[in-house]
Image (cartoon, rainbow, N blue to C red; front, side):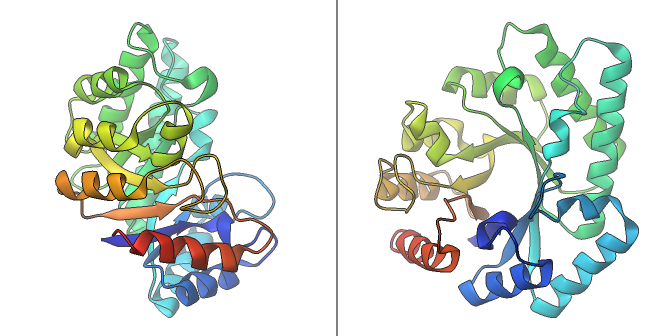
Length: 258
């Protein structure tokens, strides 16, 4: 198993080098970079050649990996549309992002599907969305980067997404806290989705710290083992007022089970 942490969880106002240092100090294997134009996030630098070079140099210096790109830009440039021009622009954007992820050695790309982008099997845009994602994956082949759709829909819809995508590298980014907070049973869903899960976010529901809320981490851990998942577990827990202390607690809590 590999353990990752989202870049914004180690302090909102610190420089990128300090984020890498803190990730190492906490014992993580990698960082999930967030391409989003927001204070305290550094991910937009992936679109710049010098920025990618800096990231790779930091990875080498601190012996860390970039687990994934949490592609917030997908909210504005996506394929969830039946407008041909917008669809092509979204596909081309994802193609560029995959090429960037290849350069950075990332294992996956998170594509957020929340709010007005929440998938529905009777929405004609969904077929366009998944076709565009599939086209971008195939246009940049060969590579092993997984494209992970994160959403908080029910099991039937998640299974429909996987079936409609019809590609071994397209699946679900499963967030145990989000799904528990939405009224679902994370362990049960993990077992049902199996290898359709491409990456997992670790998060509590109903509390900031793991073990203090509603998620049964023991059941989740058993389900993760049962489906044979042995890849990235990326923390998206609350940073709190003391990010380092919170992460030390959360990492120790998770390691009781995994």
